[in-house]
Amino acid sequence: MLERILERQGCAPLGMWPENWEQLFEKFGARYPHMEGLVRVTRESCALASLMETRPVALGDLLLLVGPPGVGKTDAAMFLAEMVGVATRRIGCADVTNGFDMTGMSEGWAGAKPGHLAKMLILEDCANPLVVLDELDKVSLAGRASDSLEARLYSVLEPISAKSFRDEFLDVPLDIMAFNWIATANSIDSIPSPILDRFRVIQVRSPSREELRSLIPGIYRTIIENESWGEA
Image (tube, rainbow, N blue to C red; front, side, top):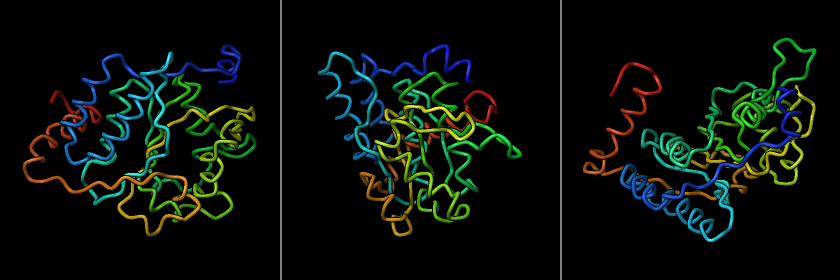
């Protein structure tokens, strides 16, 4: 990985909003009709970028989707990244036992390796990927306080710290300030205030029975594609 950093002089290309963004967001809204807030906010970010000479994918705010379980919050975030053509990675906050999974573990420790953020920047060759923090309301349950995911999030979600993020395995400064973040949660009650305050909260309602007819086929197709069970 260090060789790849040196090859690009520590830089990676920015993913750009697609030229046909208006049609894509029509598709996005049709697929997730119950997520009006997410569609509106991301579409506004794209529309603003379309007025500029360069149009890197930037959501502007850290977004937190809050709503009942099973309504497609994570699926919508992953689909958004696929739709606009940037790399993405889901980090399950309930599954991560410590913050090293995100920020790397120093050489000398058993199992030392780079973290998710460095891998996205270097291996995916994308300076503005979309990180999906799934079940952010369970972040305080993972790991001890000193090396928990919660502790690491305080720094990586802060723009000044993100500008010179240092993966503990690679031990070189990396600029992850252009990373996009969408988190999901069933409730905000258990999310630590210093983390919650960094996010723009978007409420997600349960879809109506009629809306489920357009929602379920897309989610089913995503499951089939991701699990490699065959063609949908």
